[in-house]
Length: 471
Ligand code: FAD
Ligand code: NAI
Image 1 (cartoon, helix red, strand yellow):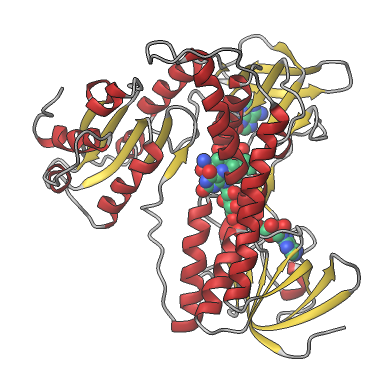
Image 2 (cartoon, rainbow, N blue to C red; image 1 turned 120 degrees about the vertical axis):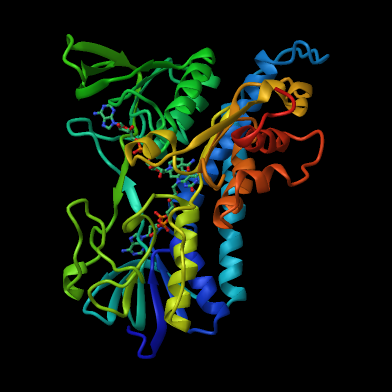
């Protein structure tokens, strides 16, 4: 069967990029259809990404804290036990509540939702293999590709999501592994490594680069993060490359090589988490039938208005350029609909925050110190440690600092890097400041409530051009 009516907009993919575009289009009065094959809306983020990982991070932190951090708080606890099944259930409850919420928002905004796999027949027509069986096709005046990304596999190690896992397997292991090796010390490796380490696994992170957290993380902050994670029991092998793996025996063997030459070593593990990055997902999409191109990294090629070679087909989110982040996908979704409806839209790619939800959290926005140095951009630094912040002290949670980078002439904020309790919430303030082109003096002259962690933010700003009061 085919739907003869041409829609104003057809969206392939119901992840953050796709579902936000669909809702926004509905609000703008467009006739919109969203095709999603997963059987649930919300994509990677809601189903196997941001949301389930944060559920496990939050609850594993609570468990770990109850085990190790009640002394000195006047709390005596007895027999603390992990109920992994219960923890997974809590995660599933959060996920299903949110994915169903999006289905509700689709209805509210008049979005048609087709459960199935979409592929281009030609520039205007999409065939859908329905999840329930059978086929249909839809036509769109405008089309948005929002098919997201998938984990990059490690050659020679077949993913079974039980012993050799990606983040998806790491979100639903049935028991705590004794030894977990994480290949890749990026955000996934550190978040999921933290979860299983807190729950009792001996975790070793093998990272090719000399710093954890990926290149966006400020080196000074990254070193602090590594130190604090090590204190929690996570082992690191930096400057070390996993060259091959063998999962045929009882334990999994990994051959690792020092990036600088050194002698090769064999590591063994019960479970190996492959977290070496994600790649755009366009498999089976039939891009060639619409004459569309991908670059050497598989990203769908677009212009500054998200248009592919065919100007009525746009592309947003993980499947195209830019950081693979849910909030970036969301911004692009709104901008893409504005381009379609009004002819203009806007995303400020210089002001996209990043957050790593370990404990403490690490969050940053704007440029880091190594980037400024590499570009010969002059800057000055202001820092403030949470150990001098009254709220952090009352919370007995004082690890970390706020670091601000500012223009030496104008005090204009260039970047902000935070490691500490609630850094992920606090970074919103830096993001707003950066978006508005604030100076650190503007920030420091803004009254902040006492006692709050945010006072550390204000004092770091003060430290860029004067002295912090409490340090
Ligand atoms: P996706 O969410 O991948 O959605 C694409 C959707 O398209 C999928 O549901 C897929 O089934 C569907 N699809 C693909 N092809 C077809 C087709 N042919 N027909 C129909 N449907 C199709 N980001 C953050 O900002 N914060 C976080 O805390 C965070 N945590 C993460 C944790 C993990 C473990 C992972 C893996 C990722 C995390 N991310 C996080 C990244 C975030 O999930 C992605 O940036 C975001 O999901 C991208 O949205 P998207 O819509 O572009 O793609
Ligand atoms: P990543 O790109 O952040 O990190 C991968 C790391 O693996 C890099 O540091 C790289 O040097 C290393 N590596 C690659 N090959 C290696 C090898 N053979 N041996 C040793 N190390 C090797 O990718 P990751 O962590 O898989 O995450 C993918 C994306 O998902 C992130 O870029 C991020 O956009 C998104 N994400 C965001 C989260 C958040 O916002 N909190 C949480 C989780 C994921």
